[in-house]
Length: 235
Image: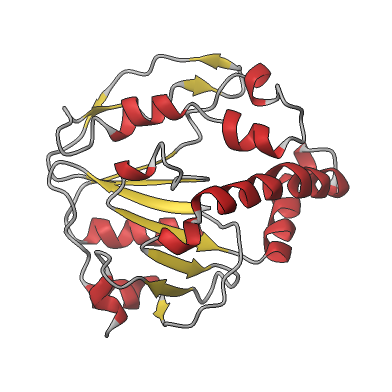
C-alpha cells in the first residue's frame, strides 16, 4: 500500500526531522530489505506529527471513490486486472480531491463519490480547506500515472508477502467466508494486482520514502536522496 501526501496551496513545510524520528519511532537507515503491501498504522502516526506543527490536517483515503460492483467485478471476482484497473474511480479522485487541493485549486474538495455498501453514487457537499492545510491520503496504487502527479511526497509501506496475507486473514476472514477464502482472494486478486502495479509503475523505486512495515512496533524507513524529507537521511 502507498501512503501519500498532497500539500495544498502552501505546498510542503516538513515536520521537524527530530520530532518525526522521536514521536513516530521511525528508525531511518539505508538498509534495503523490503517486501510488499502495507498498513495504515504508520499513516496515523504521521498525522499526529503534522498536526503538532500547527498545520491543519485533512486525513482521508481513496476508499470513498469506488466504482459500481458490476464494473469492479466485470472481469471476475478473483481478477487481478479487475482490481487494478476497475476498482476505483480515478477521475473522481483527481477532480474532486487532488485538483481542488492542488497549487491552483479552489480548496473546495470532496472525500467520497460512492457508497460502497449501498453500491450507488453519492453527491457529497464540498468542504473548504484552510489555506495552509496538509492533505494526507492513503490507499493502494497511488503512484500510478493517473494519480502520482497530484502528490508532493509519497511513502510506500512495504510488507513481506506472508505478513500481508496473515493480516488480510485476520482482518477479513469473518466477513469474507473464512480464512481459506481470504487466502484465495488475496493470492489471486490482490497480490496479483500488486504484481501488475509493481511491473507497470515500480512504486518502491519511485517513492520518496519506503517504510519496512513488517514490525509495527519498530518501523524502519529508506529516504530517497533528493526527496522533501532528504535531510533526515543524513542525520
